[in-house]
Image 1 (tube, rainbow, N blue to C red):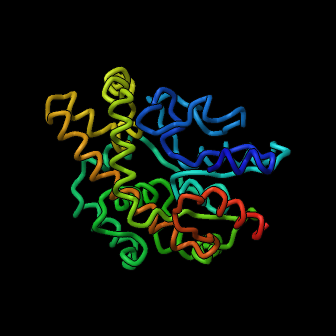
Image 2 (cartoon, rainbow, N blue to C red):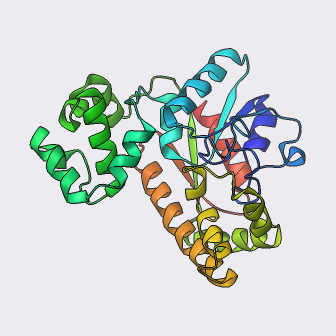
Length: 280
């Protein structure tokens, strides 16, 4: 769809898929092939090694640089709601430290929650204290910058983000697959399996960094290659986790009032083009 729209308006494409940035992770991220790209430049694909840690802050920096330098319309397509908003909204990202992050991840959750609450009694209003990753990140920010969750939430830019006040104007169309979602996930994972996902992960597993190895599909196949599960079980788990991820992504995007939603139909590409023409 992105290629079709881009070809119609003379645009280039920016991928906002958090895992397509990694070289070699092709099958498991459904990365578009050179042929599928049809000669249209695609940005933020194949830009770092899978062993690298690639933050949303760095994604934003590189993406904003592309947006400032390309003298054509741009089609932003894909995946991660956070990465999309990082490109268009007034978001800033607190510092991070891999050593500190590793230390916090090995600590007890209750201990970290206590530290957070002692520094900010209202932290639970801004951080999901049942989510270990969110708690670790909040404590990491607290230790590195001294800034509490309440202080970050009080910033003007944070209020703009919550109000969906864009920093860069855009027109957005979302496609809702409705009850076709689960079937499409099953079909795509079947294509990945027959397309060599297990072989791809086997070749990459010595080079997958902390972030890359958490990608859905990759982490399940890694467990299979480690002898923890059979191949069929690995793909069953991958399907379950992909469906959960897709539903979380849908919820994230559906909160955004700036997106016009179109149901998935056989003529969805044409409907999207008409919607874009009307909005632009």
